[in-house]
Image (spheres, rainbow, N blue to C red):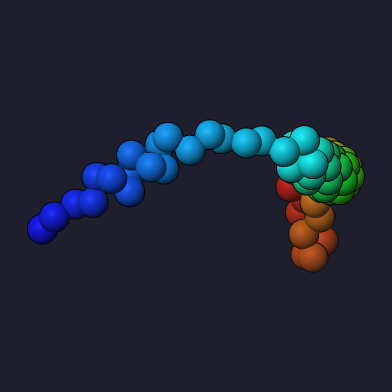
Length: 80
């Protein structure tokens, strides 16, 4: 198998031209991506807050139930 080393050398010798317009476009895409992730982060913060409130409420209910006496259906018997 023969490798065309001339083609590789030609590509390496080509000057790399960076267009300012390309850099502006890249920056705009990154800013858009960052805005998207900020919006997603805010949604997740709301969900975390809701779940924390639900856990607090559930813990409060459990605490209330554990403090109450549980009465058996049969008269005269109660357990705690």
